[in-house]
Image (cartoon, rainbow, N blue to C red; front, side):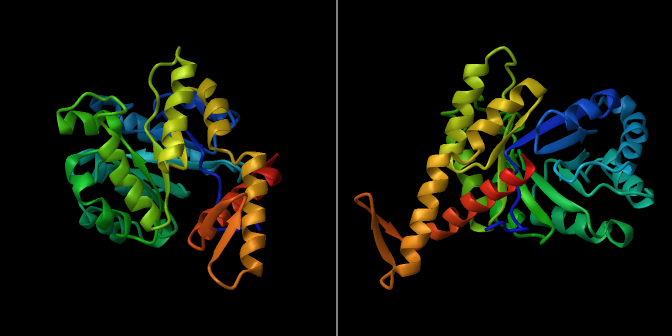
Length: 286
């Protein structure tokens, strides 16, 4: 049941681009994704230093179990253009980049055009964190076949919306991004939980994100990873149920089955196949 197109993206750990000393520890944290951040985590005066420190990290061989990416500056900024040039000139470009603050699908297509040649295999992970991005999220999500996931950026989004960054206030925005990610079969990660001393709050928010349709959550500290991974991993009960549902549909000819008294329709097969694919990946990694 292992689908090579599906991989666990339960947890993402950000590493500041100016702190390469934290990179090895991040890779050992248990996070499914490690993202070196040369955008928000780096002041304007030190962007070049962050590039110089970050790109050599990617030249080494790393475990395929951890997805590694770089969060670059927006193309609308001088440093975003410098990031693109640095990627094109790199002997070993990253396998993936995180695209910050896109407002339209045209920006994604421009990345696609600029990152060809030695950069043609770079995958995209797109942050939806502005009102323009939220308005155009459907077009953005389908702008390139290189997009693997969306991320919801509640901090910048709440500022753009002139709203407080509470779960209730951000529910509409989150739901709109969930709609786009599910429509185009993309993974979707939620914003980091910023209170490092509130592990219970982290778990509560992660569980709400999971219930809403997110496939994972970003983080800013390794100690958050175990909770996030636990929340977004299929439980043994869910895996067992998925197998039973698929077995029932294999025997069914009507498109409807009843399991434990619940009527289940054929569209649920897609999500059950995903549950089993993730479970198989995790079994292989453990």
